Image (cartoon, rainbow, N blue to C red):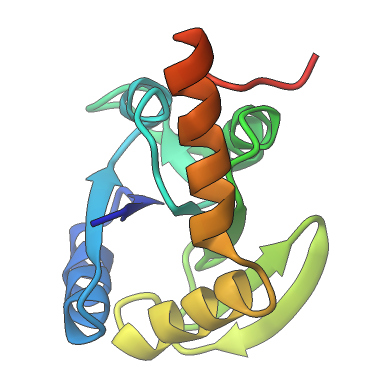
Length: 150
């Protein structure tokens, strides 16, 4: 079964994300910092949900690195969306953006599984994620390399 990569550094939010994806029968893999996420991107994921503020490495303070990670995902043709609780000081609501367009503002807190439901709906609506993954996997099988933008 294909997995979704979730990049989230707050434990209370990962509890909610596991709860939501389990309820729809999907597997996820969580990365808690930029270094870990970049390594995981070498695997084949169906899609990614990325927090805007994540630590560069484990044990460091979160920085606005999500967009840097989003650019790496884009270059790998991995469909992704940003889900953040705000920047600087996390709030009790969430914000979802896709391709630099704000989709949901003042959504449920990321510790609420509904925030992840909204993110997943926004990410998967109208996009054949499985077809995209299959194309990337065929390329890897044929060439031995990940497909990347030039």
